[in-house]
Length: 176
Image (cartoon, rainbow, N blue to C red):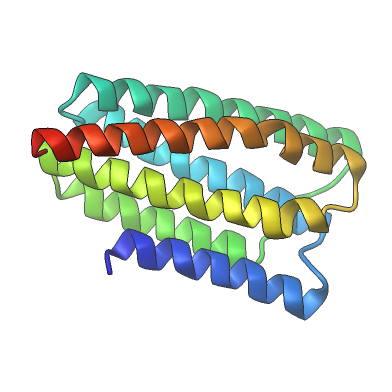
C-alpha cells in the first residue's frame, strides 16, 4: 500500500475514532481540521507549481492553491466572526504531520515521477477529506454557519477529486 493511501486511511480512522469517542469533534476542532486540511493541500500545490513537469499538473496545482486558500480565508473570517479559536486535536495534528511527510517524499522526486506521486496523493487526499466531511465534519458541526461553509465548499472538493482522477488517468496513459 502506498504511503499516501496509508496516510489518508489513518486520517479517516482518527476522524472516525474521535467522532465515536466524543460524539464528534467540537466546532473549534472542526475549524482546526478544516484549516489544516486546506493548508496541507496549499503546501503540496505550491511545491507542485515549482516541480511539476506537466503543464496540466502545474495548472491543477495552481487551482489547488487558489481554491484551498479561498476556503481558509472564508474559514478564518467565520471563526473571527463567531469568536471561535480553532483547537488543535489529534486529527489536525495528524493532518499536519502527514502533509509534512508528503512534502518530504515529493521533494525527493522530479519529472514524471513527481507528477504521478503528486496526483496520486491528490486523489487519495480528496477522497479521504470528502469522506471525513460527509461522515464526520458536517454531521458534527453544531454552528449553522460552520455547517453551511462545509456544505458550500464540498462541491469544490468533489470537482478537485474528479479533476485529479482525470489527470491520474492521463498520466497513466502517457506512462508518466
